[in-house]
Structure formats: structure tokens, C-alpha cells
Amino acid sequence: MVEIDVDTQLGCESEEEEEEELSDGELQEAFAKGLLKPGLNIPLCEPKKTINNVEGLKKCLSEFKKTLSWVERLDLTNPPAVDIVAKAEGRQQQTEGNEVINAEDDFQREMYFYRQAQATVLEALPKLRKFKISTKRPEDYFAEMAKSDPHMQKIRKKLLIKQTAMEKSEMAKKLREQRKYGKKVQTEVIQKRQKEKKAMMSAVKKYQKGMTDRLDFLEGDQDQGKKGSAPKTQINKKNPNAKRKYKDKKFGFGGKKKGSKWNTKESHNDMSGFKAKVAHGKGGKKFGKGGKSNKRPGKETRRKMKARK
Image 1 (cartoon, rainbow, N blue to C red):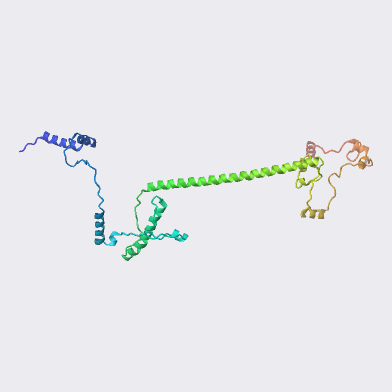
Image 2: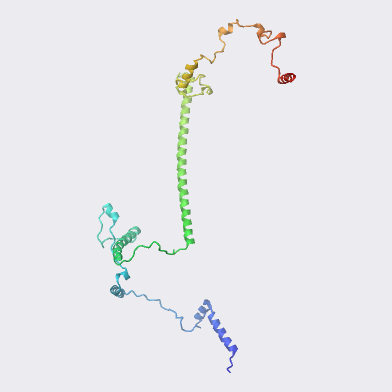
């Protein structure tokens, strides 16, 4: 039988576990002290040198072109397509390869890339159709989004908030313009009323002082009695309407009504209709026997009279 020292075996296993459980910080300290033996951890003293072997790259590219077909490579080198804007405006276009592009001009640079992509598509599509390669996505094609749905919902929410803020800003701008216009109109109306009032007062003062006898400034005023300076009679130069004419024709014009019961000098001096008994309450139709008046009995008396019957 072979005897195995259990303590020795457990000690070896514990040392291995301790070595495996060393943290990154402990490994760095051990490396700094030089306790780590050379192995997988090889320090890089010098930076890596990059080599731009242009000839080698061109050689590899030529080999790819010889060994691989165009369907596997899908490489195209095209000049930019015709500038439609320049053609529509009638500007002279530069020849292929002689067009100068300002790299600092973002719009010009991006338009150059766009036109170059257009030319590439126009050349590539016929070739792909020749090799019977579909260029359109099928209707039942399903592609998973690179961004998650919660992220897209967050973006949509921000866009809606931004759109709502822009709409509110436009609405506020319109309201401010309407207020300015309304205030302007109101100011013009007030100034017009003040001007008319000033002209009216000036005309009234002239009439009061006897400087003029014209009352044209009172035309259309329906309540002249409210103004002390205006005459009591109303000035109405308009003809009566059809309804008034019809009533006058049907019922006749009863003559003068206003002031018809006013006393005149003749009526004041006429004493023919005066009766002393009637005037002093000693007789007449309104008085009965004994000089008592035939007044109607009161409500309570009339109720008792009904109750007796």
C-alpha cells in the first residue's frame, strides 16, 4: 500500500488556489517587484512599428482581381454623375477628373460623394441583373433593429416634445402679432373717437356763441336732450318708412298731439265752462245726496256684503 501525505497534498492545492485567486492589483505589484517569471507576460518596451507597403498592397489587389470574380469583389471606381443643378441652371460643368473640390466645404464635399454614389449605382445595377442577383429586399424580409425598442421610444418621445415646443412657440408668436394688430386698431379707433368728440364740442361752442346757425353736427343723434347745449326738438330729415306711411293711410294722421293740452292766452281767459259747484265740491255728477261721494266700498266691506247674500 502507498501512503499519501494528506497535509502535503492539501498544502499544494491551497497554494495553487491562492495563485489562481490573485487579483490584478497583486499581479501588478508582483510584476513591479520582478517576482513573475518570464512566460506569457512579455513587456513591450518599444512601440509597434506600422509599415505602409504600397507595392505589396497593389500586388495583393491585382491577385484578387485575377483570382476572384467581380461578383465576389463588387468593386467599382467611378467619376461623379452629372450635376443636375448646374445643368438646370445652365452653368458650365467641368470635365471628368478636373473638378476641384474644396475639402473644407462640407456641402460641396458631400454632394461630390452623393454624385459619385449615383454613378456607381447606375453602373452596378445592370451588372447585378446580368448575374441574376436580386437588388430589392423581399416583402417578408425581417431584420432586427440595431437599437432596442425602449431606446427608440425614448427618441420618439424627445422628438414629440421638441415638435410640441416648436408648435407652442409658433402659436405664441402668432398671438403676439394678433395682440399688436388688435392694439393698433384699438388705438386708431380711440384716436378717431377723440377727434370726432373734439370736432363736436367745437361746433357746439360755435353754435352757443352764435357764430353759426347750422346744426349739421347733430345729424343722426337720437338723444339730443342729454346735451344742455342742444335744442329740445330732434332733427330728422329722413322720410317715414313704408310701415309708417301705411298706418297713416289706414288710420289717418290725428293731428298735433304733443302740447295739445297746453293753455293759451285765449283758453286762460275763457270762463264759460267754469262751474262753481263742481269746482268747490258742492254738486255735480260725482256727488250724491247730502254731498257724499259715491266711492266704491273697500275690499273687506265688499266681502261682508257678499257673505250677507
